[in-house]
Image (cartoon, rainbow, N blue to C red; front, side, top):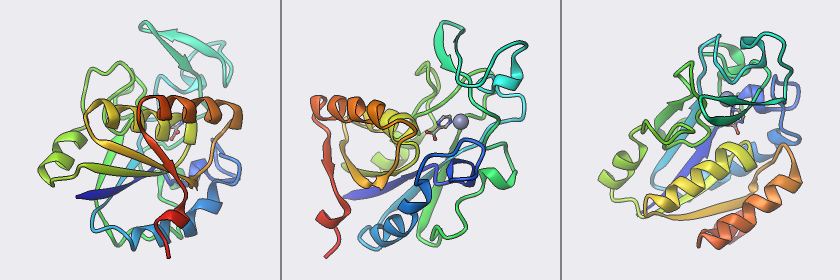
Length: 203
Ligand code: VGL
Ligand code: ZN
């Protein structure tokens, strides 16, 4: 059984959003087309409280995109984004949500960030996604969404570690920084993940 996992296709990651990923909106029609090829479609949603520790605004005299030590973990400080129930946290209005069977929210603990859809960044608390997918008989997870070198990459890594096959659909993601994405792709291949394009699935 295979599943499509749509990572954080939310307004704040789109051009004009609080944490805009260049060309982030270009993936939306591709993701919609891909969904037709899957019997099981799941999504994640970055879902932060207003005072989240990953926000630069939550720290006195810290700047956006600065890295700090947060309880022993390196944390990039982000602009305020994907605040629970805000418009920025909503899915892109053109994302087809009718096939999404479950939405796993992450980043809800104000004290720790969560890039992966499976675990927080300290790998202490699970979202329950592994159990959900295993119960559904999923063995292969196809990944798309934003941002390529953060939430998508961390989710792919965790999926591989949890024993799933993980396949990244390269043209159904975009990065904040393409150099970092290149390194992430090399890591994925090293860990026996796969990288394909949407054309390999559509047609
Ligand atoms: C993300 C940074 C902070 C992502 C979420 O979805 O890739 N990146 N929060
Ligand atoms: Zn976030």
